[in-house]
Image (cartoon, rainbow, N blue to C red; front, top):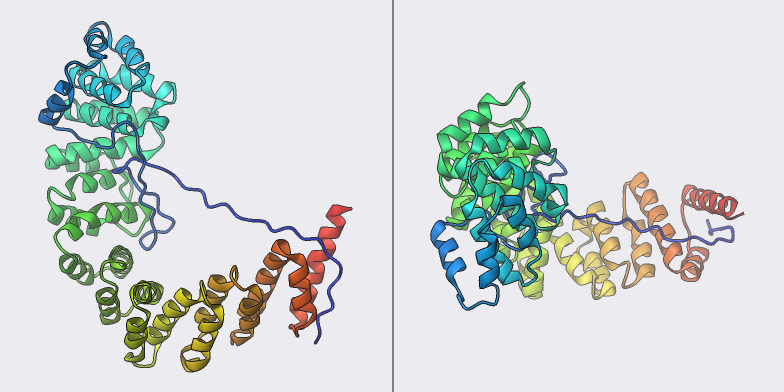
Length: 427
């Protein structure tokens, strides 16, 4: 039927994607237990979470003629809280870094708690995460139990606890593991083990792996997995892939395959695609298109040749989706022609992704392609969401397209209801 739409004035509601910035070795936040996690990287005055005494000496002794040499001498005197305030007033970042290293190195076991409390009280722990991590790292080397007792009692964010445990585990794994197990109650995931695994990842990846596999499916396990993978990938892509493929826990294996594939897409898109095909799973369905998109960015003809040699099935459709996504961003008409040429491999996910990737470039072509979707409910939801978004972006163009095309009746009805609600609010 021809669309009959009420006069409208819609605005586009754009959702904001919040991001949390964290220091390089801080704990990531996962949106699901094993398949999705966000690894954060937050810069402070110092990005390292551990510094050897040799490095500290080198940094501290560099440029002895610095204009802050006298300030440094003064900072080494007096009580810890006074010295802390003096360092905060140093504006040159390099001089401040030198003074901070000297200050942290000189703290006694009894002074750490007061300094950490003061650092947190004025918000410095949020604005200078690098300094905060270094402070916690130093405390963990002097008295990890006291540091953890303080973190348990005074912090709700896992950053401090995981930073302390990571340092402890790197220096004394048996004690850190024993503490983590002894301080966990119940049958759920042990949140303390996240920090332990992070600390062990590069020191003893085999032990870290065994601890990870003992954890139940959870956000915490996803965080621990994110901490371990960089260490495995440092041993080589083949090592990391073999480790992931050998995991017997299906959810953990899926999460590992997803993450490793994501990390190797740009450097080895064809190898990533081969590995995904050899390990068919939901991870393959969710990452195969990314691998082919990465391949197409480097050489579109090679990506098409790779796709063409695949047998019919999910992997072939997923591969087509990746190539279509790549092309659609710059040339939606060319992507449509590719879908027409390989219509047997076009499924709902191919169409859906094409729409989102081509909409900004050519909304009319994008919306016109929704009719290809075979699932009626998914098709109609896609029509409604996309057209409403288009109306918010360019009402006149959207209305012109709707008036000149045939849409399902329930889509028309939904658009009209939304228009009526908007008009009532405006009045």
